[in-house]
Length: 263
Image (cartoon, rainbow, N blue to C red; front, side, top):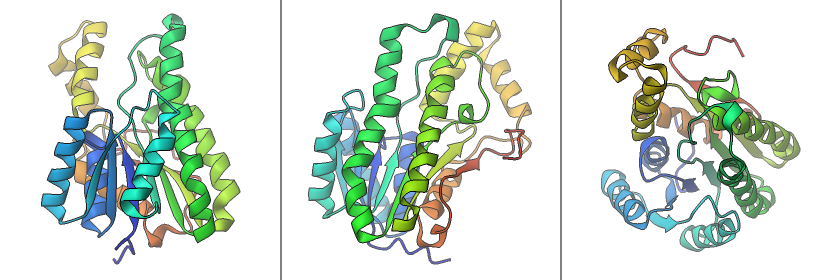
């Protein structure tokens, strides 16, 4: 299927590794031009070189810290300067701090609010006008299962992920007539650096080994395996494509059936 992404200009945030990198690679493989961002200059430069070598795409590596919402203005400007405009915006961020809801510290909540809500909303505001004027745009948010069902020991996920999902739905309804779609792409279990560190901390909290914790996670997945990064990248590329023009305000899942609800 021709996805219509050739020459489209995409900004992918938190793309130096893991799911963000997988999304960037899938878009590049379909012919998109890329700007990718991370807070670590060395990591994003390495990722940009790797993507360019693997796909032949034009890739600009940019440094931006999601903990500083005001910095999103400069990120949008630099991405626009590198690409000439932004047709596709993909929001992503590192895994939130683990912990219990009863023990949320105000300073931790404030930092995660900046990373998970304030920065994505501000960056969207900087790129949305050109999408609406062009009457074509795609905004994707890399979500998590906690948008649908809460998880123990993941208070920041449980509090803030549903909030960004609500924003996605509200914004999607406002801009659909302008040719701009806004969606969540939700992963299940993908074995990234974040998952490894989360498994370590959560298994310790439960008083079991990491091996036993992973065994339990896999046993709960009807597909019987973790996802492959290319599985997630393929979903992102389709949702960002011309072929998905009538799909907006939704959560699209790549999770092997682990979420038990129908919707």
